[in-house]
Image (cartoon, rainbow, N blue to C red; front, side, top):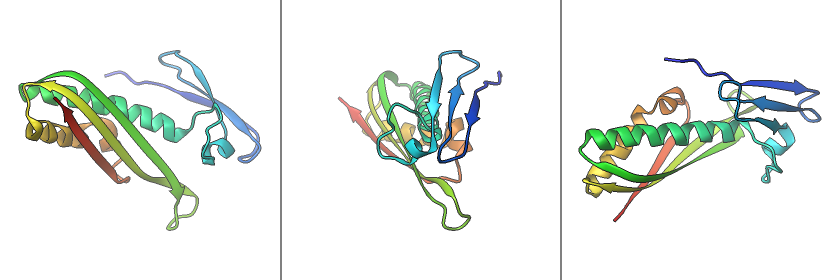
Length: 147
């Protein structure tokens, strides 16, 4: 399996500095990052490590869920997956930490009932490689099946 690469060029201090995150392997773009915008409610046109984790988790989960649905005899027509990644203070160790990840999926699936979809959704949460990498963070799941 391949290795994927991203890099960040950072200039300045935490509070006054900023950086650029480059998605090196795919070459799809370079994105601005800064700590003040990372900690603000409005991202102001910059990304953050949490948003990048959310992107990784939502896409990984969608792939894993589509595979598990097929293994269960269903056919995924569409999966709308959102990952909300929260950052907060780390009272035990100082600094900050990821305080939670909420996965929300709405699926349109042929061949599975609600119970089968819920089972597949939970299995995908457990089996997704990004979920496995983030075992130190509480991950919740809200799954619903459209008819």
